[in-house]
Image 1: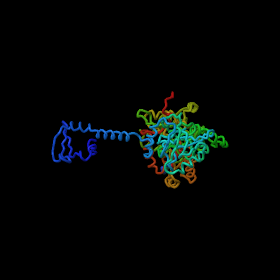
Image 2 (image 1 turned 30 degrees about the horizontal axis):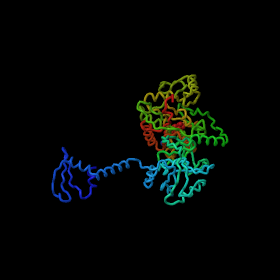
Image 3 (image 1 turned 135 degrees about the vertical axis):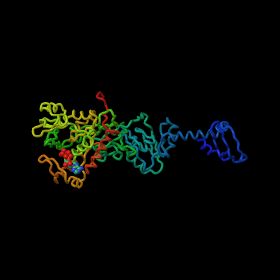
Image 4 (image 1 turned 30 degrees about the vertical axis):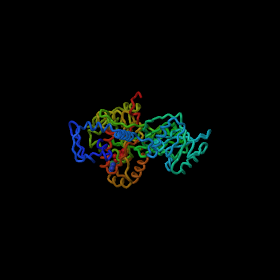
Length: 529
Ligand SMILES: Nc1ncnc2c1ncn2[C@@H]1O[C@H](COP(=O)(O)OP(=O)(O)OP(=O)(O)O)[C@@H](O)[C@H]1O
């Protein structure tokens, strides 16, 4: 910094060849521009510094330098360089009733705020300031501010559309006269993170106050809600963050009332699934075949919350591993992938030991192959909701219990299960913190190519080749499951090449356990909360 100051000295005082030595501070002047040129004098550095620092011009220079540093450190507000002069104008007259904002908005930047008209008084108000937009970054407009004039003409009583027209057709500087909202409370809201559980399109919503400011989202999208001050319309950004400014989305209560309206407006949908929804497995020769029930609603309650609040969670090393759930259409290869993972690393990955009422066979061990239990005990467990899934084959009952999952987790292993999509709801709990991976069917061509030698189990045959009908059904079911349950998926793996899919799955599972992940906030709360 010292050498920088010297650079700024006037030429008559220019010093060259400056050397600072250690110990007592000495300064050697190799040359001076005028009479002293060529002379070498050794002076006490402290004396020179004392004189130098007392010089008024250097003091002034240091003050300027310090102010510039402070300015650089502080986040400039207003954000735009050409609007920076405004902050002085406003702070100079903080108590003034009216503020005149020069240069703030110039076409085509008339965005970042919405206006509305008070039908009784004819007053035009700033309705909302879009988070991250130009008006917000300037810090000069706030919801509730009264818009009095635009470019010297009164806008009181004017239609909002007309005001917007004036703004958009204005060129260069726009002059606003605004009376600030005296009741304004500056709430510095902390963002809240939400997972969208429904789809929303502002262009199809006639109730949105400003469709241009609306933001579309689909189920499963992660939303950063930056403003909840309005009970009906929130402001949010989609994550990973793309847009610099937020968009309008309906609040949870608003979306719920829309869902109710839709629900009443639609004819009653009769559940066409002929099987009871809790029983999704039939078993043949101890092999489980899943039967996808895509006619069931993803939520038993179709009017459940449209947003799910989420937070980043990093599993601690002493905590249980998160349960890994594999979901996919029957025949897509969920079972094959699960078996491969366990075979690849049995000390890390394990599946829960199923329960059965069938008699134990020679060579089998209870607790290793199955938990062999009586029919009474099995039924008691069913009544007490201890099974995630259960089914019957040749008069014997089989099921996957929550206790068997717990057993694997308590041993410090990663428990991997494959279940039918509706069973996700049973497993979404604070204790299990499940991580859901959707095993997706590859493209129709790749499906046919890769499964040429594959075998499937059907209701009527064991280990037969795939038929054209099987492929079509598999594709259709895969699409249906994705469309209905995507809000619950943490990851998607396309099961194209088996080896690749297995490796991909391995790395996703490791990430799910060791890296921060978004999970429902409710899973982080204690029982009492
Ligand atoms: N990527 C793949 N490439 C080739 N064959 C595969 C692939 N994935 C799975 N398969 C084969 O497809 C057949 C069906 O797989 P799998 O039994 O895992 O299906 P599933 O999804 O568990 O369905 P279900 O529950 O009805 O048995 C098996 O023969 C399996 O080896």
